[in-house]
Image (tube, rainbow, N blue to C red; front, side):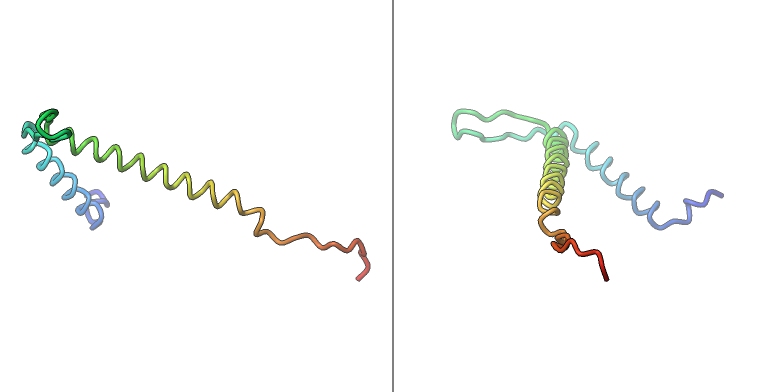
Length: 92
């Protein structure tokens, strides 16, 4: 018997993936009307398209925020470093 069968994390992730597959497959062709401009522009899109676009947008926004936080912290890292001693005396 493989060792990963005994890991609780494996069963949690498997349950989560199967639940997501069920949600996406049951709502694959459910049309949703978006009212972008009232009484004029209201395209009909599938619910799964909205879920996929939201997931991609969320991942991209998360990566952008992480990049911005790392860039800002590395930009100011040199300012918080200890300054070298100004004395040139090497005698103790």
